[in-house]
Every structure is written in structure tokens, then in C-alpha cells.
Length: 338
Image 1 (cartoon, rainbow, N blue to C red):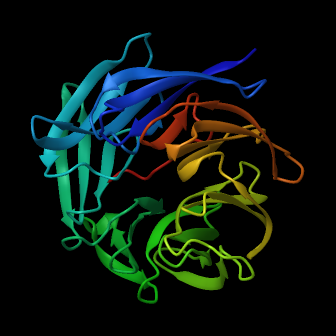
Image 2 (image 1 turned 90 degrees about the horizontal axis):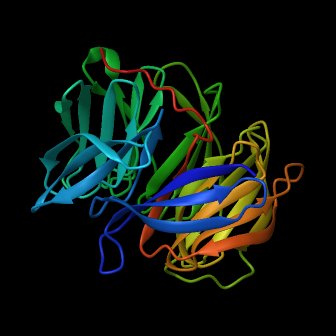
């Protein structure tokens, strides 16, 4: 039996108060827990990197980020800093820095990891209520999908994060989250408001060529007008693409053929309002969090077809937003600022 620790980020509520830890049996797909691991109200999105867990946090009316060492049985706080007026919706880290995207402030904050804690390295303003929803890296280009502004802002890290253009979308698209293949030749993006999958060919630097756009909610079926898509993940072998859609409560699976994507499955998410999900490194399971009902669920995957075949386990996870699994299913390699 192979048991891994996993962690959940949550919205602050009467039922949730921070980061929760669960155990996952990678042989059977069974989940146990979760239990409160660290009190970090409004932790939302988590980043796990080499045993270090970065999380948004709100304390005493202030918002910021904390860094936790998960090596021991108990969490060990290694740093925290409060430089934001509201909790960030996205966080990612590398060896030297923690990056947060603040949806309401419209700001990107870059924190430096120091031996004695965390310091603020740089603040980038993208416009009040720009809807900053993610941070990605393409070589030395930092990419920030701004949902409300219907564009992805590009920043040149070699020029002190100077603006380097943007990728624009029709009004009301709401670009949310994206993912690259390992070679950084293909870029896949899901839109929240228009529920579409965008496929790009990625060139060197800030060059992106749109190859196709597909609707996630095909005609011929009545969908909730409130349906909004959320997360996007690429399978470890890069043969399949997975997306979640809230209010429709769906996981959608695409089979990839170069720059073409073929929808092969749409199945229930195991609950209500699916947010984040992850795919295990062996492509045998998909773990998803449903914010309102259903909690944290695990599905068995068929590695050959990429499809979800059965629901293996379900545990309560109120207000869950994000899920990470240790050891990391896929390494995150970023180019740190200089």
C-alpha cells in the first residue's frame, strides 16, 4: 500500500478554517481524512514545492502569504508576510520566490524566500478588479490571465517585469487558467465565462498563434446559464486534457492529436461546483474538489483511453478550492527573477 499526504485549500467559513491534510492510497484510490492541518483562513489556492507549502492567509484583518515546511508530522511555519488587502486567489513558487495573483486588487506580488522568512520583492499592478486569476511562465515571460479584462498580460522578466504585450479575447470570454505541454510548444487555456477551450502554438518569447477554439458545453443539451468553467490539467503523458465546469458539475476529457483536441467524455464531477483537480503521476486517478456538495473525490482513470471509469472514494471537504498531492505529481520548474 502506497499512502501519500494531500492538502486542501479552502474558503473561510463556519465549516472551514484553513489548510486540511488527507491521505490517499495510490493503490486503491481510497481517501481518508481530511483534518485541519494549519489554521490559515481563506487559504484558497495552494502551491506545494519540494515539501514547502505556500498559501494565502488572512490574519487580524490583514492578508498575505505564508510558507510551511511539511517535512515533519506537524506543520512548521517558516515565514509569513501581510502585504495585501484581500486574500490572493492563486499562488505558485520556485526555489527563490513566491508569486501571488490577487483577483480583486488586480495585483501580482512577488515574495522572496529568505533564511529568516519572507520579504516583498515586487508588486505589479494590472488594474483594479482586473480579475488576475493565475500566473504562468514561458521562458522568461510571465503570463497573467485577467478574467475581467479578457486578456492575458505578458511581462518580460529580463526587463524587470516590463509589459511585453498581451493575448486578447472577445468581450465576455473570461480567460481563467492555462497549461503548457512540457516542451512549451502548445498552450491550452480554459475560459470561465464563455466555457471554451483555446489551443495555441507557443513560440519563443511572447509569440502565440491561436490554432483552435472549442465549446465545452456542446449544443443539443440544456445547460445551466450559470455554468462557469474552472480548472484545466494535462495528463502526465500529454495525451489527454481535463477540464472542470461548475454549475454544470462536469469533468470534460479531450484526446489530443498535436494541436487538435477531440472531446471523448463528459461525466459528473461527483458533487456540486467542482473547482480544482489533479491527476496522479501514474495517470491512474483523478482527485477533484467539489466546493458545495460531494467534497473531495477520487476517480479511477483508464491510462489507455484517458477516461474516468469509476468513483473510488469520497470524503467531506467543505468550501474546498484547491488540492495538491505529495510527492508532487508534476514538478514545477520556473525561471526565477534576476
